Length: 253
Image 1: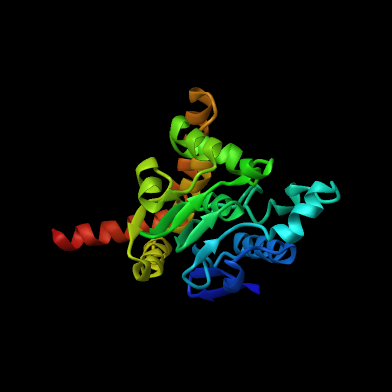
Image 2: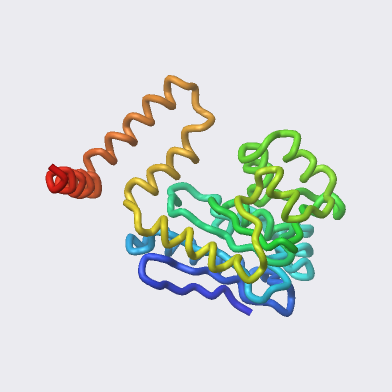
């Protein structure tokens, strides 16, 4: 069991690798996942990330309850210690594409919500079962889900604790694309490659804006948006891009 972290050019791959236990996360695996995200944050060579699970039965079913629940229930362990694994820390603006096959439940669902583009298999199953067990999905979901999709859809997912199909998640706006299981990872890597080929300054600024401006008063949001825009306009990436555009224009004359 492990968190497999590899690089190929500008793309990093994180694979939750415990297929015999539906990729349930041990406390050590949570720590390793968080470390992987921190390493990606600080590595300028990485421009996009694909997050997936090993095998076809599950993306991730969340925490290994035999280990984590006793620790949480005894109040000797705080769920905030999982914040890095759920990307609940400031400054992470690298785009993450999730490739979801099989079960995506509990903490696995919550980790998916920390990603930016979500590709799901047609037979994938999604659930936030926490209320059935007397607790809540506090790994980012209580904050993220109502901001990412419509309020009524978010509340149905959280309050009913029922299972949803990939088609349901597509209709509610939780996932971007639903494809055959064997197409999930190829499409995820296709998206990652497209993103990695673009300006990293522009891409990470777009994500920064999406995460930091949405709840501000309009005047303040527009002021900060202008600053982010100016930062990209004066970047080395923009200068190269504008020079290339000018050269193409000259060639057409």
